[in-house]
Amino acid sequence: MIKFFRQFRQRMIKENRVSRYLLYAIGEIVLVVVGILMPSLCPDPKGCANTQNR
Picture 1 (cartoon, rainbow, N blue to C red):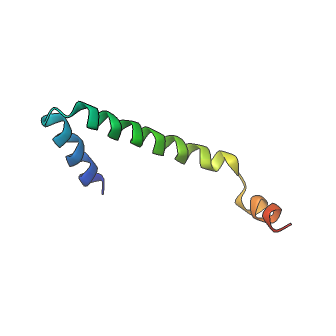
Picture 2 (picture 1 turned 90 degrees about the horizontal axis):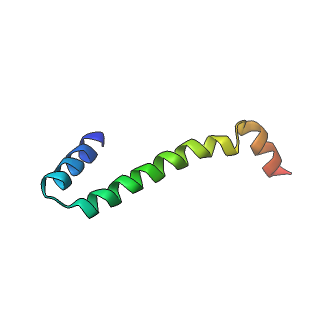
């Protein structure tokens, strides 16, 4: 999967598709931010599961 994204990024740079590459970069940044924020919403998964059952 990482190889696919690396090839995609290199192809976009090589073909001078800057706008499409920027869209890809913004999407990647959003995914990283969401991945970082998800654990901060519920640091203790067992505690969050107990509150959902109530």
